[in-house]
Amino acid sequence: MSLRLHVPPLRLRLRPQGVLLILCGSALLRIALFSELYLRYVKEGLRPYLVVSGAALIALGLLGLFTRDHGREWDEEEGEGEEDSHVEGEGHDHTRNPRIAWLLTAPALALLLFPPPALGSYSAEREEARVAAQGAGTFPELPAGDPLDLTLGVFASRAEWDTGASLKGRTVRLTGFVTRDDGGAWSVARLRVTCCAADAQALKVEVRGADAPAADTWVKVTGTWHPTGRPGTDAARPVLDAVSVKRTTAPSDPYEKR
Amino acid sequence: MENGRNVADGVRVAARALVYAVVGGVALLAVVTVGSVLGPMVVLDLATPAMAAWWTVFTAVAVQGIPFLLLGTVVSAAIGAFVPERVFRRVLPKNPALAVPVAGAAGVVLPGCECASVPVADSLMRRGVAPAAALAFLLSAPAINPVVLVATSIAFPGDPAMVGARLVASLATAVAMGWLWVRFGREEWLPSVRRGGGPAATARGWRGFRDGLQHDFLHAGGFLVLGAAAAATFNILVPRSLLDVFTGSPWLSVLLLAVLAVVLCVCSEADAFVAASLTGFSPTARLAFMVVGPMVDLKLVALQAGTFGRAFAVRFSSVTWVVAVVSSVLVGGWLL
Image (cartoon, rainbow over all chains, first blue to last red; front, side, top):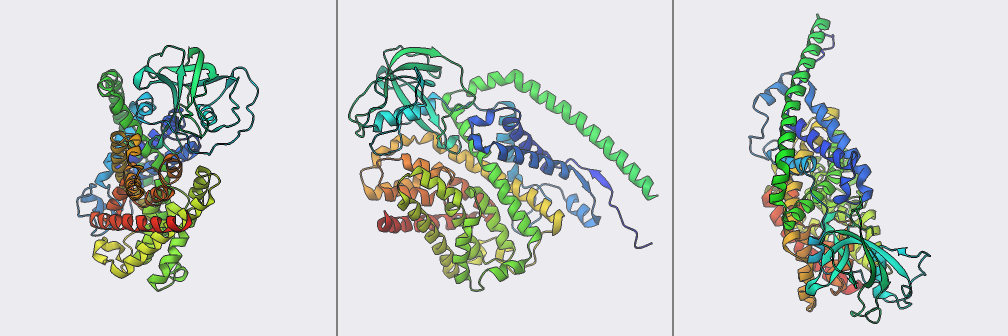
């Protein structure tokens, strides 16, 4: 009789921990699995981790909602209230919900209800455009194509560092959003993200010979390279003489890959 | 009788689930409806470009941190629930002064950002590892793991000295901090549970794993959000182009980049690319940026304050900052 296995009753409890975990998990799945919104915040390679994390958080949250009762002590612990009402540090009770965790609702609800937009001209205008120093030298020949689609990064680094002038005589097409510079000039710009949007760096190519569309408009600019100085010096800046400026839709990945 | 109880249990659970689903569903519908009707107005109000950029950077830091935080809490919960204390006693030398460099070098095995290392160091302490050794691990893991070293070598092509300098300076800082803790550290700066020797308060096995994971993730996640908010605020307030003003003086530029690493909270996989783009700064200043960044930044201070207490986080982070700057200046002078 005493050997009979005691099966604790299965119960469903609406615990704040479980709800929070499910909220965070669904926010991750919404941006990474059911849409490509995650590209506004982090790099492409993080997608599988986001999906796995989201699924794991939801599973953990559901597990927390359905619990078997394990004897009386468990009940008593919960009876004192699930909020973390005691001083942190004396005893480390893992069954309560730490109050600070409620902060997680801010990014989770933001992502679920109003996903913040991708960074655009506001961030690009605040930043000096910089291409990591590579040292002047010759670059490999550009592939065929007329016009040739180039990323802003490739165009800018060749304009600034290529002593072989491989851009000369080529018609290229650049895609980016419009930013206004000081003194009436405008640039086609793109942000380059390495890890997440917090480390975004601006890439800008000044456009000459065309009127500026409204800031943040996505455009395809076709034109030719306008040399401004000897490569490797400060005078060499990326500038494009535009032949045509066409509006386009924002790409799903708003940032440029490294 | 048992069977009858189980059936009744099942029915009760099903009924409860139904009630929750209905109530929760109605509440969610209401929120979504109100949100989608009022949303555009609220968004218009908030849509100054600066505010929008703040929200984007804030969510980006949180989204980027959560998978790594989850990895860290999974490892730490597994250590807490499945690895017996004697394993660590056998692997690590008894003398804390000897255990520090071993633990520092062990940082190589935890790939990922700094968010992962805080919960792992915490659970090491709770498993009876000397605090000095766990702290050396905490500092070295995000800076010297292979992912970060490869990223550094990509960011500085043709400059292997920079990768070596980063490895040496980071490891030196971590070990120095561990030894400083052995010599000057006081146990009362840490919460009582981590002082070692005491019985582990957590349950063992799967149940302990799940409870530990849930608690640690939520707890650290809250502090991650706090740190993300601070990082986003600085990101919006301090334009990076402002830095060019300070490139003139070599000493000032080292200190400036070391401060910048604290407030920008760029994750340790990305900071090498940011450092590489800070042309005009001396190599030593850029090294300081990469050594300080993974060890002291606002997000980490928030995480540490949540895990080890505010008293600890403030003392530890400020001393680490000084040691990291000194170590990068010395190593930079030697290797770069």
